[in-house]
Length: 137
Image 1 (cartoon, rainbow, N blue to C red):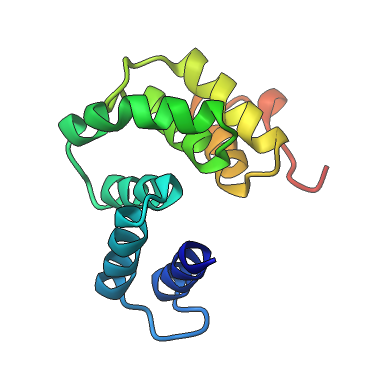
Image 2: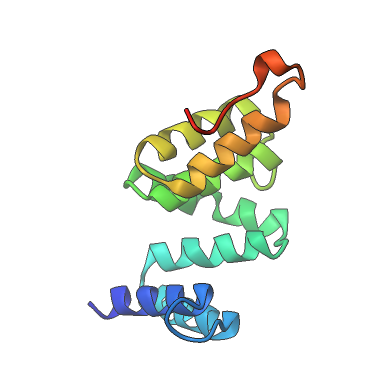
């Protein structure tokens, strides 16, 4: 429907894949979709805010929405909650909870969550060659 089209168009402007990258236009499209009742648009707006250093207060205000969206199956919400646990932004700092959420989202196909989980593991892995991971398998 119309909301799906707005979300898709916003992703084009965010990535610059089909049209010239324009975050302002992407944000406007997401706002329009959110006003139409799209929870996914609201979550994507929150994710953009997080990337740009949004406040912990804004994340905390969205916590219930994120949890409800995750419960309803939103992969993006699951990955955002993981990041919030990892950084302690809007949720209590908890690396184990972050890992659990990242792992679930990665298993469901989220490349974002997979990359974040790998980065989290890499940052904590000892420098000893015994613990080196070869990306080639």
